[in-house]
Length: 210
Ligand code: FES
Ligand code: FES
Image 1 (cartoon, rainbow, N blue to C red):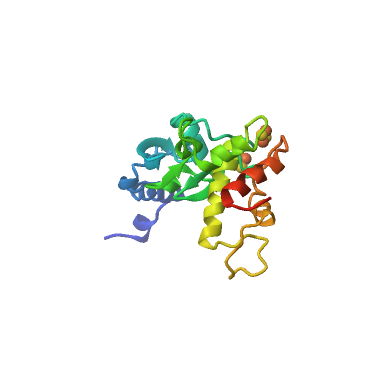
Image 2 (image 1 turned 90 degrees about the vertical axis):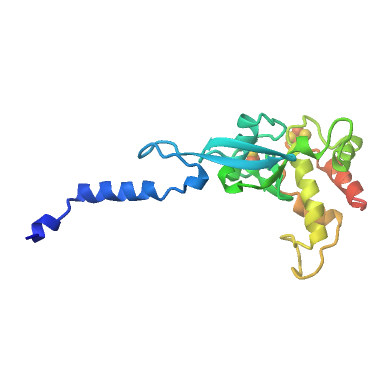
């Protein structure tokens, strides 16, 4: 006959049972591999980067920025602060601007990622790239890939009617103005202070005088 003592589990037994159960719930489809408590967990993620499907096996803590730079060697995307403050790492994810240092690669399974390398080529520049060159919208150039990706995202946001933080009426269709562009680009820092020329470049593509 089973006694109460037979049913009593020690704390250690419970912890072991819990860990085994958690390991069993890791989804096989995500390709995740757990290697024990505290060890890195790796997972497969497939991204469409600049029009090409790329499958990577990454530590699940890998940022999208590091996946692009360290795994795919797309070093056009820059690491400035690595904490979401400078905008140097901005890329487009499904057309929306994203600070890639604050986003994990595994969050973007199946997403379309566009980096500065995918916007245009030296022989066929994106209009925003051409405008930055025409208006001298850079000095050292470190912030420039993020500025350009962000600017492309900004004009698309305005076209889609996405309000900015400066909007007096968030239900109104935003207008493209120099003030609006300044507000929307305020997350992209340029330590060289090329702001006036950056604004001229974006203004030209947007069709407004800055
Ligand atoms: Fe991502 Fe600065 S490197 S915001
Ligand atoms: Fe040097 Fe912007 S051009 S930081």
